[in-house]
Image 1 (cartoon, rainbow, N blue to C red):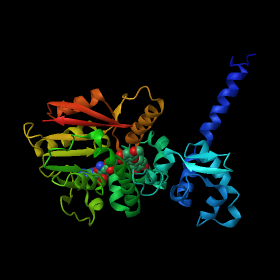
Image 2: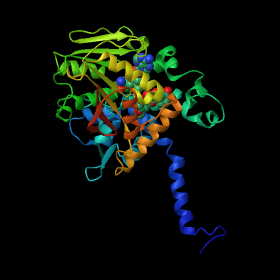
Image 3: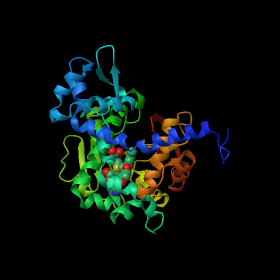
Image 4: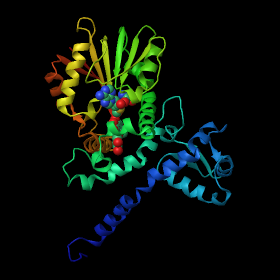
Length: 357
Ligand SMILES: C[S@@+](CC[C@H](N)C(=O)[O-])C[C@H]1O[C@@H](n2cnc3c(N)ncnc32)[C@H](O)[C@@H]1O
Ligand SMILES: COc1cc(O)c2c(=O)c(O)c(-c3ccc(O)c(O)c3)oc2c1
């Protein structure tokens, strides 16, 4: 049976059910933030047995008001649906961490994107996303400027609390990636190098891991003064405060992790040219190591592709930049005067690319 618009009732019901999923999806990150604030992933992780009963979990929640205990199974059901926890019915209402849930554990050895969840729920970030409609009508470069009146980087320089939340998010991700960088999956990328500058290296999580794994490799972190703050290096690790558009320390190689996607093509070419001037010659092993996304590279993984599209949208609304396809990367490398590049490995949503002078 068709209605007036020739859409059959079955199609309408399906569409309506799907639209409820979109309408209600704003609650998912709020529930994850709530679980993090209550310390649920940490409690499940520290529990002696991998499966924790509901009553033990409730008893272990330090800040829970006793009048709210009946909310916990409701919250846990949503988070089980969302794939963060397993529910074990046979064992009498027990919960365990899934591998995604494990990424929410504070200071987990294999890294964590707990602080990225908190960053994504920060009012500054939520207000940026809520300003996209207004931004499309004004003449400002980014929705961040529409919402906050200045660029993301200037805002970080002026608001110590937001700066800390942003840098923590990056550091959590960096600890996760560092474990991969010093593992067999990236063997050979850092071997034989004598010095490396991590440009825009944040608070130094990647450089710290590389410096630890390669004691004869001198590692320098270059970032803006409000990020480096009073960080002191030691041994083969050094911190330098400054702008990458002014001066880059000379080194064998340069690391650019999640830097180029923050900048438009013109700025990227400017930065890559400066990198080329600062690294050793090709004969002496000079290279720039890039960790960034290659769009359209994971076409058979629908979820990764959707995340890449959202990342591209984030870059456009916060930095007036974009995520790039392999063709777009190649164009940048050639314009900056590099002679070749190699995609070394995939690191999930991102890839590790080497470019050679
Ligand atoms: C997206 S974050 C990536 C941080 C780090 N590489 C990581 O992946 O965890 C970009 C970094 O670039 C830094 N940055 C922005 N503008 C810069 C500049 N002009 N000179 C040096 N660093 C800059 C930011 O402070 C920030 O730490
Ligand atoms: C998920 O992975 C990433 C990777 C990044 O490198 C960035 C990034 O650099 C960034 O500025 C932002 C960002 C997003 C929204 C905001 O309102 C804002 O001020 C900044 O998000 C990122 C997310």
